[in-house]
Amino acid sequence: MRKQKMPNGGDTRPPIEGRKVTSVFRATKQGPHYRPGNVRTTLLLMRVFWQWFINMPTMLKMRKAYKLRKKNRKAGDDISVIFYSDNLDELNGISNSLRSVVPYLRAQGKKVQLWGNAFNTRVCGVVEDHYVVLFPRAASMEQLGYADSELAIPQLSYVLRFLKRYPADLMELETPSPGAWLVGLAARIIGVRVISHYRTDVPNYTRSLVKEAWMRRYVLWLMRVFYQNTAPVISPCEAYREILENEIKMKTKDIKVLPRGIPLENFCFPLSGGVPKAGWVSSDLKVYPTFLYVGRISAEKNIAFLERLWREFCKENGKAELVFVGHGWYLDTLKEHLEDHSNVRFEGVKTGKELAEFYANASFFLFPSGTDTFGNVVVESIASGTPVLVTDKGGPKDIVNNAKEKCGWVLPFDDLGEWKKQLNKCCETFGTPEYQQMREHCVEHSKNYTLEKMTAAQWDFFKSIL
Image (cartoon, rainbow, N blue to C red; front, side, top):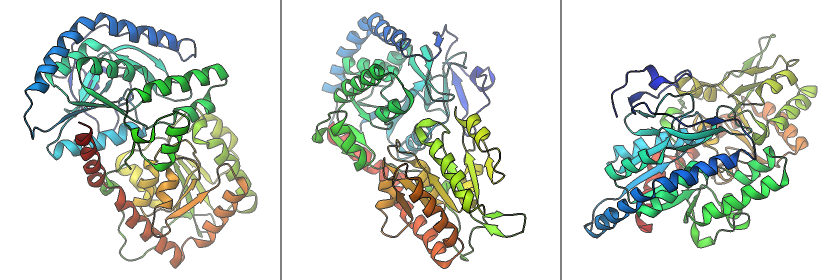
């Protein structure tokens, strides 16, 4: 490792707010970057096996050292944990969540590290903010249906050097990616306990994005092999415990439900004064509600349904505004389909304070997805005092259903009539004392999803399985 000499670590992308390159790896030849394709995924698997094969002597040597380390451990020694995810060098829910959790744990004195892969636009691997290690790539491929996202595998020799320099007791794999297969298998050979976290509903994503039936069956088979060999698996909600049991064929005893947490302080709004949200000011100077969507704008998020819903809603009620915050492969199509609606705005990707302001200024939050395992954006919304509308599929429904007082609505997935009816009710409720009370209930309920509660439960679980 050496100090940074290239701006942003040599990355050709615009810098992501809040992330700073603090050191870079020595320049090395990075592997190829492939276009997306079902058959081409086998090229990544071949490189996984090659990386594993050529580094086997090193892994076997390290296995002896790790056995000796375990033997010499003393009672009371704290554990060391690595979180590994192949999409840390992107802007997404998994990356944002881990980049909040890990520094919080480090601030509590825990021995934790966050590892991933450098994006294909970087000339070499980097370290960001002194704790996020993005290893040089051995190969990568664009993810089908995901804008600005990729499947990647790291150069295993660098991972092994770090495992030697920073010994770990446990590794949590965040996604069932080729990189996680490679790093997880290497860690198991060395002697590190490996578990996984069900953060992505891969079976449902595959059904949404992949046409070929054989590919869907193949992906499902890979998921079963991956999760059954990285047990116990952490599920963020009860809804996905059922999916893990029924589709992935996990045993109940191998699933642990641990709800996630977010840095609530980044999304709070002042409740004093009871002033209703401003909403959307129309041409006749009247104030109407603003509906907000935040997230990836792509097929698996059910954006096409939201598009149809808004068109139907506006046939009878044009006194509202819809704002999209995010980016995705469906964005251009969405803009084209809604270009005749002046009450629709597209704001692009927002982070930090700008994003918090969109949540705080919205009247209601729309989230029609049925594939999210938790829904960080839903917690961010209620922490901002913005009631939410979610579907009865996936993790977000648990957030709403678990509230003691009403903070939103759980609506039937893809039911245009029920969603349209609820949008009209929202317009009627907006600005009333009932609406203001719901905002207060939202903020109060969001306190169940603090980083403090989440990380305490997570660390106790880690210690129990070791």
